[in-house]
Amino acid sequence: MVVVEKAQKIDLSDAEKVTRMKLGGSEFDFDARVGDPTCVLLSSLLPRYANLYELDLSKNDISDKGLHYLATRALSPDFVDGAWACRVAVLNLSENQIGDEGLVSLATAMKRNEFLTKIDLSRNKFTSAGVKFLSKGLVRSKYNNLQELILEDNQKLGQGALDPIFEVLSRLDPSGSDCSTLKSLSISGIKLFSTGCVKLGQMLSRNGTLEHLSVSNCGLDEPPPKVLPKPKSKKEYRELVKQQRREEEEERRSSSSKKAAPRPRDDSGLRLLCQSLQMNSSLRTLDLSQNGLVTQDFVASVIYLNANPKTKLEHLKVNDNNIGISMAQFRPLIIEEVLPNQALRIVDLWSNPTEHGVVRELAALMKRKAPSQAIQFH
Image 1: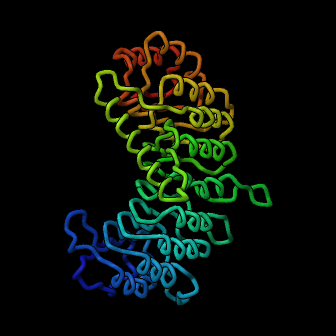
Image 2 (image 1 turned 180 degrees about the vertical axis):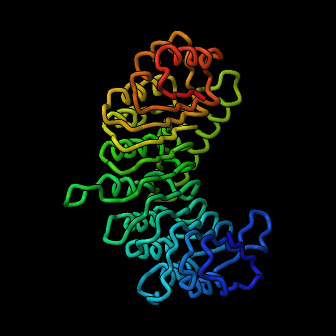
Image 3 (image 1 turned 30 degrees about the vertical axis):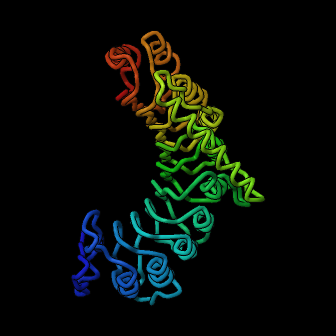
């Protein structure tokens, strides 16, 4: 990989030999980060790198203006000379300052770019309005070939922000095929709540192309936050403020007491998500870590998977949840539900309140019951 520092000149002498490039980028040294002016210059030079496969612009200060020049001049075929075609397939824009307007330019370029297969937009500044434009770039077209999209830890995305993406992944085109070519989606760290989990389950029951899905730490068991009504007068506003303060005071008192009230839980979305595994025939990896799953949720997911003759799920990650499998529950679950499943190979159960002897018992069961299968409980 060619690494270009902020003050370093870009060498074009061996441009055709470069396949991977990282420009600037630093987590702690802010002076080493590049911004929009560098992107303006880079957009005119990128077409000279005819064999460039991966472009890493992560941990910089690129905003909407820089992404606009990059998308319209380097990633769009309208501005590319026929002799110098920019063929970047992997574009990493994580940890920048990209907002909604930048996603408008990127979505426009995605519709006409046949080379882009992976985009990382984690930890940026865009909101639900930008996601709505981005979802339009996911729609299958003559040139669109995007395979992987990463949107992790975008804190400005609230309840319902990802619904446009779920809608696109749920639709079929006139020929009956999926409306998108996306095969991998990572939305970890974005709060979906139980309402978003319902939309996620509906999407999985209809989609036939998505193979890898990561939804760790998305609050799938949490009820949606209360939406306060807009006050019509100053008097109503004061009353709402007083009510909110009273509720916060009650929460502080309950949390400071010896027997604190348990966190409210809404498992309606998780139930639908587990049921969708009975109909999905494309997923190979599913990450549900850090979502408050309990034993019943895990058992339901395994049962629905076993009831799906077309399932392809090989790796199920349920780390850091509240799954407490006892020896009495473990043996019938493995013998009746996991062993008959020919697709499931690996189940990750790290950091769960599971009994210590479960893993050793599993190893013994695997040798006797299914020596040909490579199922692993980590």
